Image (cartoon, rainbow, N blue to C red):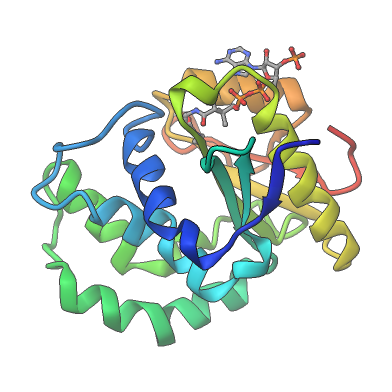
Length: 202
Ligand SMILES: CC(C)(COP(=O)(O)OP(=O)(O)OC[C@H]1O[C@@H](n2cnc3c(N)ncnc32)[C@H](O)[C@@H]1OP(=O)(O)O)[C@@H](O)C(=O)NCCC(=O)NCCS
């Protein structure tokens, strides 16, 4: 048993908790903002809503320990996000311009989906987010989640996937490099951008 299975709608609340508990450069963000649900509203919920077939859960029998979510084509995801997800986000969160402080910055990210169109990623049209609870880390589940996602993307004819990393998240960077992700053109120290071919074998 790999401990990886497709996402089910009844996982939703647990996955939101996992998102918040790992959201601040990989560390617990509970209570950091006036509303914890901002984190999943930007980095989890839209993927489950718009691309649920690319969401996989690590579950060794006691419920979700972590997840990977993704979209196969970032360009069309941005269009659907703007049309279908953004109106719901705008009802819930204020857009302060220019944003000051982390909470306003995360809201700004959620409310400007075009920021997902990163230069340097055209050969890697998919993108992903992955999070595991601290007690589930370091057991190979992250590798297994990525392997499952890459296989699904590859079966759909998608050649590459990319992701952005918070530069403060050195553990995540080490994980991706260990799996064979490399820095893409367009990556900067402030906004690292990594990618991998879906047939790379991790
Ligand atoms: C980053 C994360 C997804 C990695 O998943 P994981 O299950 O802990 O990683 P695995 O156990 O599958 O490790 C796979 C390989 O990466 C290496 N690795 C993982 N985390 C590492 C770290 N912090 N430092 C160095 N190497 C690391 C492992 O040693 C392992 O190598 P090996 O197979 O050759 O022994 C997970 O730790 C996590 O969710 N962290 C908090 C949230 C987060 O930062 N998400 C990413 C945001 S971009």
